[in-house]
Amino acid sequence: MRIGTWIAIIPTAAISIWFALANRSSVTLSFDPLSVDEPTWAIRIPLFVVVFGGVFIGMIAGGIVVWWGEGRWRQEAQKSRIESRKAVDPVAE
Image 1 (spheres, rainbow, N blue to C red):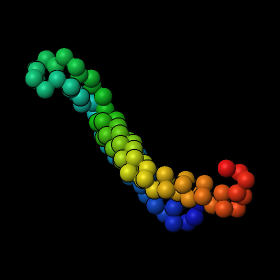
Image 2 (cartoon, rainbow, N blue to C red; image 1 turned 120 degrees about the horizontal axis):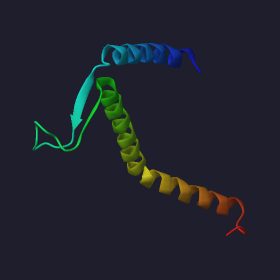
Image 3 (tube, rainbow, N blue to C red; image 1 turned 90 degrees about the vertical axis):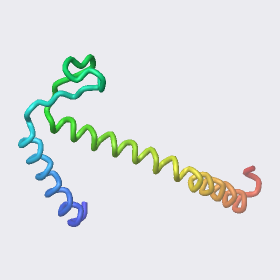
């Protein structure tokens, strides 16, 4: 890997580990907005798991959106490859 990659990865990893160690206390993650006192769907997990989980889900969702948006360009590239193969070898249709 290039030095620029290491310059970005090492501080990011250090800050992430520092954040995780500083936020080990448990929080209640509730999926029941109507019952605040006795939530039906609730789980107690460390705060850093909630934050890192949100970041992970956001990265996956963003990747899916970008992949979906580039579908037209992938389709055009595939058509271009097929056309160039036909131009090189017209028998391979």
